[in-house]
Length: 82
Image 1: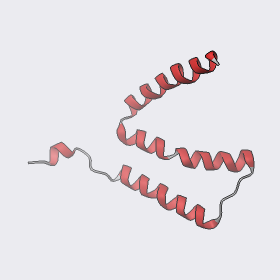
Image 2 (image 1 turned 180 degrees about the horizontal axis):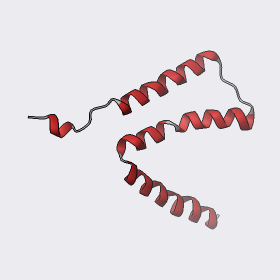
Image 3 (image 1 turned 90 degrees about the vertical axis):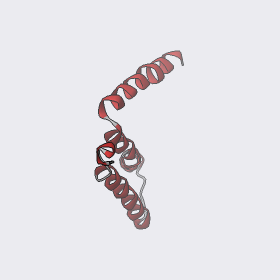
Image 4 (image 1 turned 30 degrees about the horizontal axis):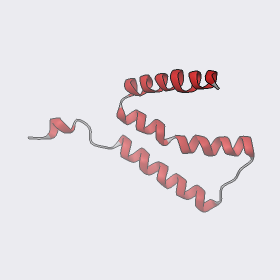
């Protein structure tokens, strides 16, 4: 248990926060929005789970909305103010 806590919390979280610091908020948001997609893909391949067509369409709409918000959001908001 102590080894798992050391690796998972101390080393893993330290690396995660260092990565997020280098990526910036937009790319970090994109990475976290991909969590559900990766979980669904791993569930399909590892556990033979399946999604109905409505669930698949709904998840695609939500994921595309997150992508759109991240890619086309406001950039340099302080530069545009007068």
